[in-house]
Length: 137
Image (tube, rainbow, N blue to C red; front, side, top):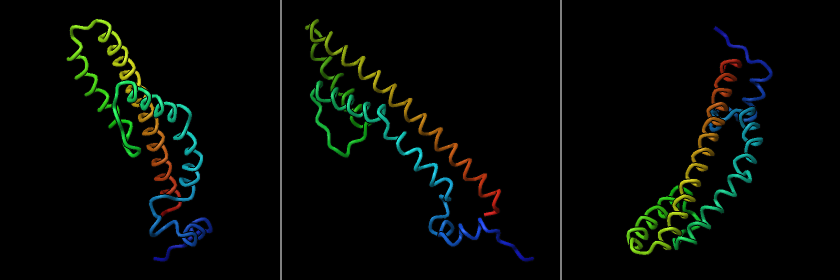
């Protein structure tokens, strides 16, 4: 049984899409380039900035390579400790509860962004699989 390779498959083979780069075809690579600005959108960058501002307000230090999730966990742990220490100070408790509300809002925003990113990548993966089936790759 012989297999014919059409011009699209031949171009993909010659461009090295198969082999080391078999998991990302050209169309998916184009989709990724289109979606990169979304991943670095104002919402995402603004969220990271807001998380760092809250960390500074609470007194948490963080490293440049810390993920937003790691910073949020540190903030949560610190707030819990500060709330325990401020039981007799209503003004401090009020301030800390405000920080805690901000923490919950930031956590929800992060979850929403991650959910959206997950759905985008799921759709790209499905598109890639469909392209492979269509082109017999």
